[in-house]
Length: 100
Image (cartoon, rainbow, N blue to C red; front, side, top):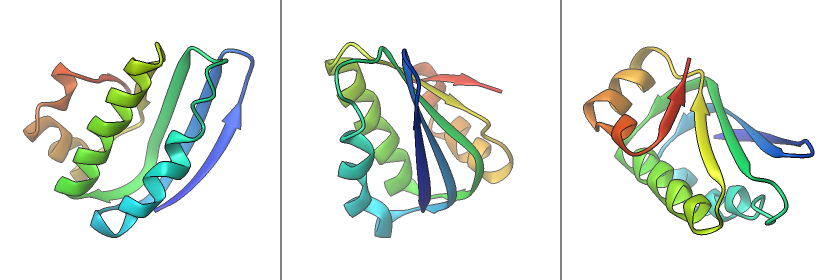
C-alpha cells in the first residue's frame, strides 16, 4: 500500500494506492497519526486501490473508530471493482460513509 496525504484547512485527504492487506498493518499508525485534532474530516481516496483483504477491511474499521473518537468524520471515496465488492460483502457501508 502506498499513500499520500494532503491537508486543507478543514480536511485531511489520504490517497491510497496498490494493495491494502495484512502486510500493511504496520503502516496503519502512519495514517492514524494524520489525525491531529485540527480538522473535522478524514477523506480516504481509494480510487487507485486495486485489492483489499479482510485485514484491510479491518484497518478501515480501526480508522473509523479512531476518527470517530476524535470527532472526525471519515469519508471513503472512489472505491471500485473488487475493492467495492469486498466492502459491499462486508457491509461496511452501514458503518462508514462512502462516496463515489
